[in-house]
Length: 133
Image (cartoon, rainbow, N blue to C red):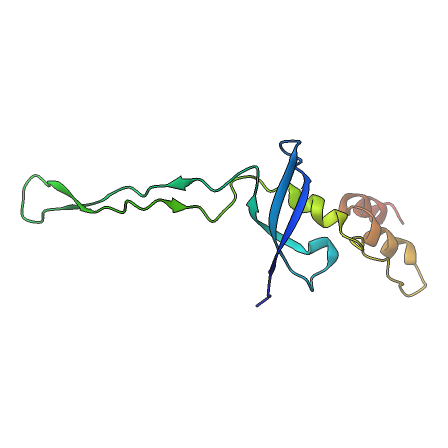
């Protein structure tokens, strides 16, 4: 199991276009392009408390079924998830130093298709593969 650290970051939110303070779950030993894993807290979307609905039960020997309140939890609960699409994670991962993987050397013979596969999109690589005859 990976040990994730909580790190603090400040950046401009791509969704709301204003400054935001984030607490992010980070994998310190991960690749730079996948180092930031999840947003734990955001200053733009604070955790809002909510109440669970009261639990209802029914008397077993009454006809028609008559409900009664079985248990009530009056303490507010807080959500552990941030309620946004988390568009800031790809931005933070792209900004990491060394986010682009270096191009690896290949065999030396017919390297062009392998270099295209490493650097271009799959659609463009497929086009090059089909028309490379």
